[in-house]
Image (cartoon, rainbow, N blue to C red; front, side, top):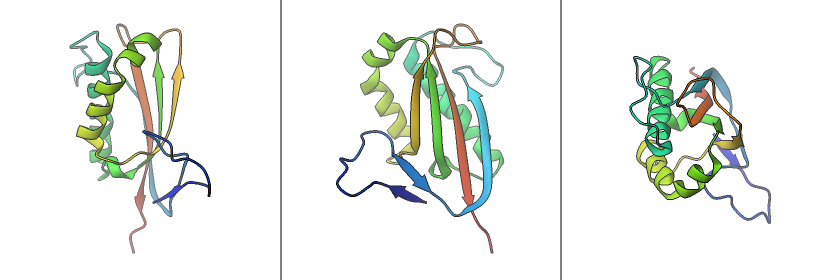
Length: 133
């Protein structure tokens, strides 16, 4: 996996502008909200929901033999921009706990609502496992 940063560009904080991979097995993870395995929300706050949604993605990837380091693209949908902005430091700590210093190409989209209440944030991901000989 190669992080793409054009010459002269300032490095982005918390994401990569682009990622290049030699595709092996590609894994697409549907949007995951902050509920547990029985589809119950344990919190209405954005940080615990983000933590659970990211954990859900990692659990799904594990079924395919992948890890967080294989994620090359992630999209986040959030319906509470003020809560997101207020929790950025805490969200960053959760990211580092679960993902370390791996920052895929990412987009953050603010939306009016999510399907699953009381969901505040939804994450979807694309991961690529390296080719095996």
